[in-house]
Image (cartoon, rainbow, N blue to C red; front, side):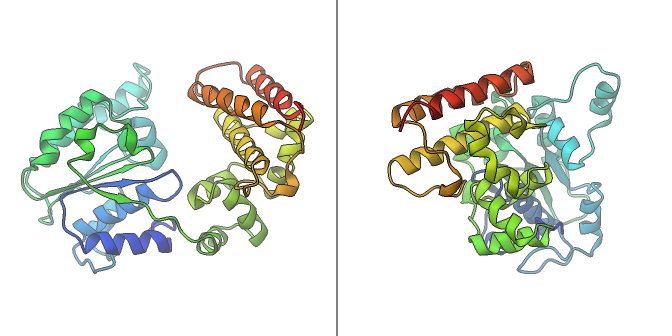
Length: 333
């Protein structure tokens, strides 16, 4: 298993779900808790030739076939961009279209891929251990693709099981959610998450800073760290923003900038109403900003979040966002 799949909170949930019956699971929760890793661990266990109560053996032919992405009884349904990111092969036709620049890799789960998955679910198992369909992120199914899945999800043909994993299950069609057994992802205790982060290469101080910076989500904390953000840069970020220092966001994407500003705004509002901060230490926060200005800023950031992936001029967008932050922070106590 990968280090993420063997994280203690993933292993415990896998064991619990394997002890229950059901042909379709929906793993739901915020990002960074391991939905994809848990979904893959379940699929591995279902198809494993020597499974235990805790999961797959990781040594049989079936486990090896999944490791090298060639298992005949596993259908992985993802946006093409996510398939590429996670190392899953695209179909020859899709790969050819992308290589020949006929189109870009899709960011949603296309109906053509869904129809292939439905056809896959109706075939006989090649290895005799049944079949598994893994869908991630499930909320990326467009309406047509989701509707194409409904009948198969409700009445699957033969020995096939589905596992849908989502960071935003509320975006799924109610008819999809109702056909699945729901599992809410477990939040690991901070000490468990910090220990896991240290096993991934962070030192103790980095783990202690990056985990709250990611809202307590260990996988998001790891990705945040791997993106180049260190504990010192995060600690000085609030006051750098208040002073208009654009270098604080050097090499950050617009989406990352908006997310960091939302965390700062959240913690400043929390302090104003006497609550605890979540993402920064209270001593790291600037003193300015009124409740009214911070609330308006939060609403503006929510609007910016919806368009953060649009092809704006990154430099101009960064200047606008930092200027907006300064105005909110300098509006008075």
